[in-house]
Image 1: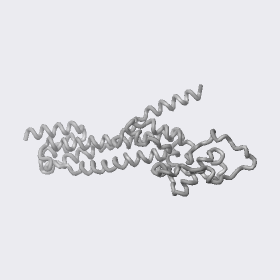
Image 2 (image 1 turned 120 degrees about the horizontal axis):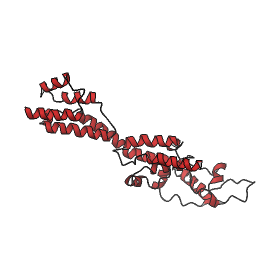
Image 3 (image 1 turned 60 degrees about the horizontal axis):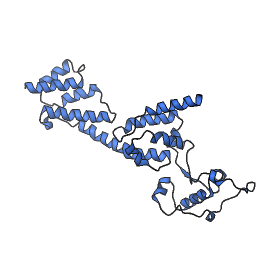
Image 4 (image 1 turned 45 degrees about the vertical axis):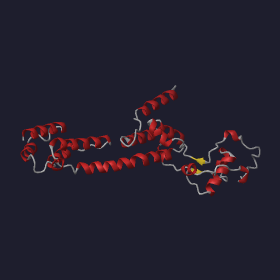
Length: 259
């Protein structure tokens, strides 16, 4: 019964991680998925680099088929150092196990049942399967196809980071630059100015970036430049701190209609 309850608890926690949709929610998804992996003792798996097994390793001989060990040696000779490199390379996996001499244990000449051994030439982290499942379970269908066929939790995580974090960082930089370069004078009228400001702020919020109201509201007034100076002074001296952003925008529109 305790084991069943533990599994139920894990399922509930995992369901609380919104699925990764793309760059728009990568930052918050990454925080949540790393926290979930850590809670399940699987976080180390996304930092573990898969290694090729060795024909001369007693451990690898014990749990890996001779064919897989032969493939591992051929991959090593070919300079393949990662499973994603193997995927991109053709004609290497067809290998004759007899071509690679494998050390034998004199006390175990009857050989273990090959059917019960791993046929994978790569050694993954001990929690790799769990970590990979945790990650792919939190991906939207269109994102899942981007990592289809990848066994390594690290390579799955790295692929997602390459696809979406870089794009997010670039978009974040461009939006912040735009925010600090929107001026009433260049917008030509109040409606366009407020629209550009509001759209940029909302876009940043979708990336998980919230600008402190104590910074953004004075910034908006400053970007009015030499226009509406009486309005600017009145707001700074009275209720700027208590106004919401929407209320400030609304008052700016009314002020524009009066003038």
